Length: 431
Image 1 (cartoon, one colour):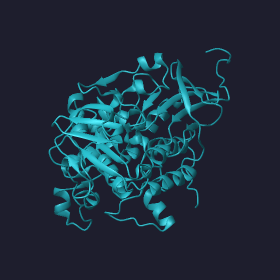
Image 2 (image 1 turned 30 degrees about the vertical axis):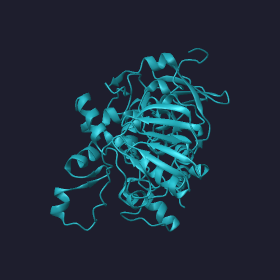
Image 3 (image 1 turned 90 degrees about the horizontal axis):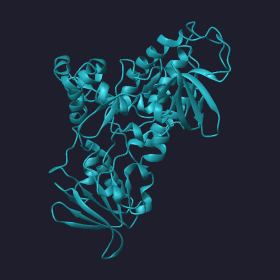
Image 4 (image 1 turned 180 degrees about the vertical axis):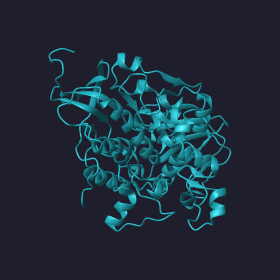
């Protein structure tokens, strides 16, 4: 780096750039600003939820597990509901449109200053110094970068479906408006909430869905436990963001302890906790309505079929299915090569935890810092380090606190433009 005198800081340099404005990015920005760090948060608030989730979708998580995080807990989903006269109770699913509105409300009040622009390139410039290039050509220097890009870059479509042309097939994250399929035959591949709910919404949009699931039987989540259980029952079967029971309670409350387990054990927990299943409230909208091929995988897929355009699927069971379109609701698989904003040299310095399944999450410190000092990864890419909680919104609070600890620990290593490192007064904005 040249052009700056020792001990001075250019005006376009900040302590941290947060890339992404979903639940994790917004929460981290809120904590970092409250700690007195200079922050620039780039991304369209809640864009993945607004632009990649189907309209009419309901969140699977309970209301108390759907909070974004600020240091005072002043802007949780419960506060949003109170402000907007919305129900906040066990067993009340959250419409995705409501959750998006909550995220915008949080962004305006707790994470003020989100810039709806895209970071296209992050380059390492030396020890704890990065250049972030924006879509409009602006370049921002930062002492730390938090990669909070959500799940959409990691959308996974298995073979042979990934070879089909985009006009007849795609991942579920491509279809926010399922009404476009009215009157059309749509094959949905998958056995989890995304697949089952997509099929149900397609049916309700007057499409003709057919679910293809590799499991021999679809799984359904139980009704939420009542909140008025006795203390002995609560102790034996505590409720958590990951479900009920001591095992899930431990992973939900102590993700830092999960990180101390072996990589193989952590991967098993991520893979086996809250596996593919439909929400309890979805069952009546699906069963006896949507036809299902169980114990089936797609052995071959060809664009076009005897009836004309579309696609023909050959299943491992020998069954043939003709459809106008195929939606793969087959989840997300972390691969840092699918985060193109990372400069190649920077990407190559990130050590990963590789599993036989092909998943390769970054190896992270207890503060979510990668092997590149000052480069942090949160959300789904952190699940192989901290466990299954990081797959859900409920992990935002733990993550924001830990990341903020890492950011503030190194803030004094650099010259500053003013008394940034003095502990600021944290104020709650009045609504």
